[in-house]
Length: 79
Image 1 (cartoon, rainbow, N blue to C red):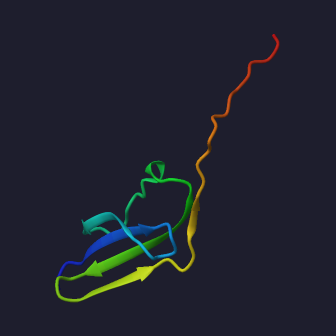
Image 2: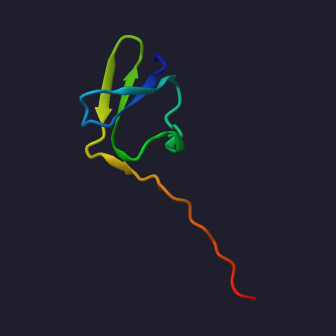
Image 3: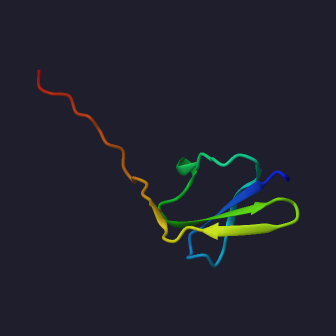
């Protein structure tokens, strides 16, 4: 059997435009680099190919990433 390779892409506009995230993956897991993404709603597209046949799937609903625009500050007590 042929080895499957995967590619991942993200869309922040409902699937009209896709930005490549990773290509030529041979594993079925991936650590999404959330720290490099802006706040917003994203769709994820996963494509698989065995070199001859190819297919893809897209998340049914967008997932949200929320980035804080502030840093929490711990204030010392009176003492």
